[in-house]
Structures are given as structure tokens and as C-alpha cells.
Amino acid sequence: MSRLLEKLFRSYYRRNSIPPPPKVEMREFGFQLFESQAMVRHLAFASGEELNRYIRERTPMHAYYSTALYEHPSAPEMSEKGWKGAEIVFDIDVDHISTPCKELHDRWKCLDCEAEGWGQPPRCPRCGSERLERKTWVCDMCISVARDEILKLVDFLERDFGFDRAEMRVYFSGHRGFHLHIESEWALGLDQEVRRELVDYVRGVGLEPELLLRATKRGKYSLRYSLENSGWPGRIAKYAELVLSERLSSHEESSLELSLDEWREIISRAVSELGVKVDEKVTIDTRRLIRLPWTLHGKTGLRVVGFSVSEFEGLTAEEILRRAIAFSEEEVRVRMSEMPRRVLFYDMPSSGGDVRVPLFLAVYLHSNGGAEVLTQL
Image 1 (cartoon, rainbow, N blue to C red):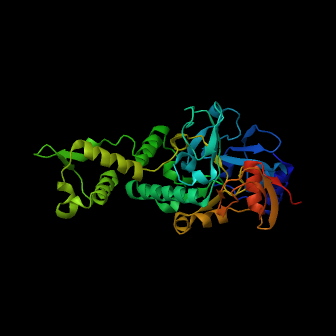
Image 2: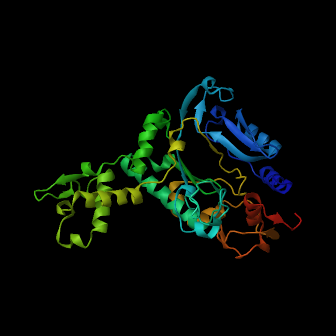
Image 3: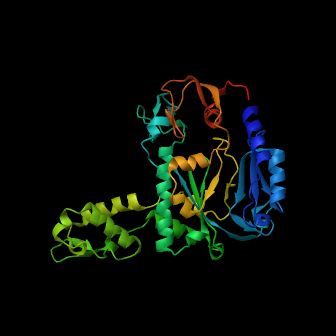
């Protein structure tokens, strides 16, 4: 990684103090430094001042902290740390969500036949190989989709589980998605199986259509539940009312009769659209390292910024990205052979070459795509 990026990161950390997470003395910290690809782990700090001193002296490219609380967070073996509980964390990343904007900024190249193109196909369209080298970027359209997933998740957590939004915090990861933390004292001790059930529920995993239906006298099926029901039954009923609105003109939704296959199709579509696309591994892992808020992401130069749920609801994707900008809007010249056609909230030239862009965008193009910064900084 270039000395330019390290210089900019060092300047940021010397100008800004990173707020420590709650109970900082019980957290494990990990850092990837500019001089090495290896992760420096099993670090602990007695205070926010000590944490910031380390960050200013070492200038990390990536900074992480544990969602878990430990009695001895700096112990080199996990079995020696003395686990005391962990926050519940959900991760939503647009890498795992199909978005039309990927055709504007994500590139792929087949490692077998060397075909290449835009977008994110699951396999090479020429030879069928799954060995694809990918280059991914983020834009406001990506973040808008991920934002909608977070709001769906909040609705599940509030309505179906009774979590208080005052105990939730949303963080833009600095790259392609969000983390939602539940900072509830009573939830710290929940084990992996309980967390697995929680994440399966919001994803709609294991929802059996037959449990939502009842057979009618004419060999058909109708919904067993109505709009007034809570949880997935009520969500399915509302979805069915929406997609079957024409048929419902003269029927109540509970008496509408369809074949079992028709209901299975409708319920499957409902789960696909209403379920939250979260990374289950992050929620289940009670010893996870997650990005440290207000630090910089080494692939973008953007900050990991946090929001209350109420604040987050009122922001557009562009506003979220603008909150994450850490460097100035002073224009600099960069050179890049092949640019994404849209990145952050900018439409880029269709071909590569020399362009003038704000410094924060130049940092992203440089750190993620190897763009050469031509202006002396």
C-alpha cells in the first residue's frame, strides 16, 4: 500500500480522537498495519486515551474490536480470555445482494478462459467456471439497498422480539454495508444457538408454508392467519393481500382459496422479499472482531460512522456516504486505466485516463483500484 495513503491516515488520526467502545477495558482489539498484511491481535487497552495513543503511533490501515467482553482480553488463547458475554451484531453487505448498479461498477475476469465484463455473475458466462476474479466498488444505489435491509431488520427486532431501538446502533462499515449492534445488557449472555435462531427468523429460514395454511372443503387452501396477526404470519397475510389484490376484490384474504403450489410460490416470494439478507456467520459468532467506529477503512478511506436508528431512518444513501467522508473536497488529478462508471455518488468517465476528482474520491480510487494520484500532496 502506498506511502500516500499511510500519510493521509496518519494525519486523520492525529487530528481526531476515536471514541472508545463501551467497557473498552474488556475488549480485544486487532489491527492491520500498513507495513504488514498480518493481523496484530490480542491487544487490550485500559482506557480510550491508551487506545488513541496506539492508533496515533501505529497508524492502522484497518482497526477492529471484539463484540465480546472478556475478563482477560489480551490473553493469547481464546480459552484463556474468560468470555463474559457479547453484543448481538448483524452484518448487511451488498456483496451478498443482487443490485442493478453492479453493472455500473463491478468488474469480473475469468481465471480459466480470461473472459471479462461488468456486473457480478455467479459463474463465467462463456465457460461456466466459478473461478472469477472480482473488483467491487460501492455507490449510493448500493447503499440505498443495504439501508432498506437495515430498516427491515429494525422492524423485525422491534415488532417481533421487543428490542428497544434505543439499544440499537447502526454503523456504516466504511465500504459496502452496515452493522447493527444491539447493546442490551440482558442479551450479552445469549449463546450461539439462540443467536442462530434469531438470525434464521429474520431471514425466514425454515418457514413451512403448510403451517400457515388450512385445507378447504373444495380441495384448496386458504391462509390460516389474517392481517391482524403478528410476526411472519401477519407479514405473509399482508404480502398475499398485496399480490392478490385483484382476486381479493370480492373475498376476504382468509377465505381466498388457492392450490397448495400457488400458496407455496407466494410464500416463497414473500420470504425472499421480506426476509432480511444478513450474514449469519457474524451474528452467530460470539467472539467476532468488528470494525471500530470512527476509524478509516483501508480499501476506501471512508470512516466507519454510527447512527441512532431514528437518525438513520431520516438519511438518504448519499447523506450517509457524505457523513463517512474523512478527507477534503479539494480536487486532485488521478490516472486510472479502467474506472468504475459510478462510484459513491459520482458518474465517472466511460474510459480511463486522467481526471480531476475530490481528494476523498481519489483516496478511494487509489486504495481500492490502484489509481495513480498525480497531484502533489
